[in-house]
Length: 216
Image (cartoon, rainbow, N blue to C red):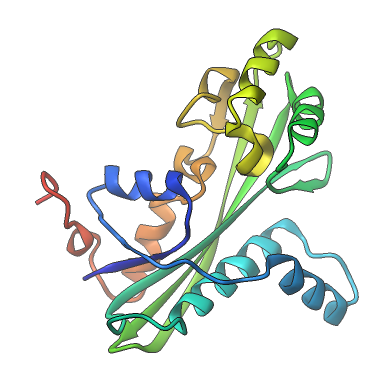
């Protein structure tokens, strides 16, 4: 069984590779802001974090499923999205150094919640079939002794600018996190236990996805 990943996230790719899976990458062409705005307008209310990440995960998966490719998709196609919530405020990628610093000044020494959405589509010869979604949640606590010099150095690397919540647990940001409650891979942006459950719900066995050397 082949897994297709509707994402350009290096962290998600590295996570799957470490789990023995070499996915086929598809860049989902999705205007996330437009999808959210249209949905919130239709609902007449702002989206809750769980709804938001599953909505965008589904939008990415469905966009990738309809993409023009050299060969038809045969296997399982996964879309994902993540947001970080602190004090009831939803944070995606900061994109700028100033935004990243503002967030870290607010979150250091505190605990926030990372929501990771998943949407899995079963596809045969390019034709989408059954699909299923789920959201994984993890609580993240940040070091309370992170000083300004360390924060400046971390932001200068550029890493926190392009990840939800302005932090990572699998790279340079890991030493600034003191605890995680929940599945750690959720914080990377893709919960492996959640994905396994979705795969099995669609009637497939997790080991059939292993296709990297050393996994077999």
